[in-house]
Image 1 (cartoon, rainbow, N blue to C red):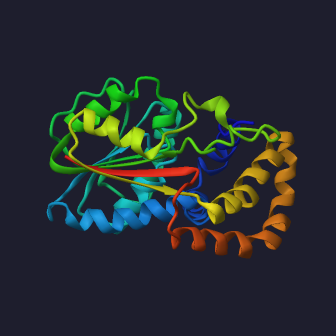
Image 2 (image 1 turned 90 degrees about the vertical axis):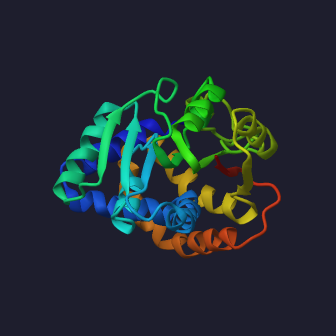
Length: 269
């Protein structure tokens, strides 16, 4: 089972319509538990950055939903959104111009080859590191790219089943990943090895988040991988499960999670 074919369908669907893309962003923020965590962290950290035009790197921007969130909520920020998918970036850049957001620029880049020096006050990297072979090189590039006292936020699957890789009887998303994920201590140590001193990691997608992920994201994805026409059934499916799904997301973000299938690490230079 794969994300990319489904993502490409949505990319085509929202490509030429700004309203559809805004609705799509709202749905991503509503349905994906990681967005609940990431937006909360951004609201906590960005106000700590320099007050005039903090520079932010969205490393692996995808659909650019986090760049949009930052641009809208922190209009004084300057954001550079990077990705290796040129078509995604072109679509995002066109949308941002249409809605008048001028504080975001886009660039095609491989994170293994970026060469910035002390330029950014914050780097955001969401669900990217698990796709990269030479992760230590990328972490070094992030460290070099940050200004003094700059922050790095990484979201990734954990080694505790973040891609359902340990579930022998169910389909997995691991085919699109270079590694299954990270343990908290492993990623913290890699960040310290490249120079970060202040590193704090915590697990997400605990008991409730894992159940929410399955009923809200995984099973619908399985349906769409079987047949794209099943998208017509999704509104009826979500009419039933949505209240339970959202409540479980809420419980996860308000739980003390010792072991989870997601991992967020915040590092400071």
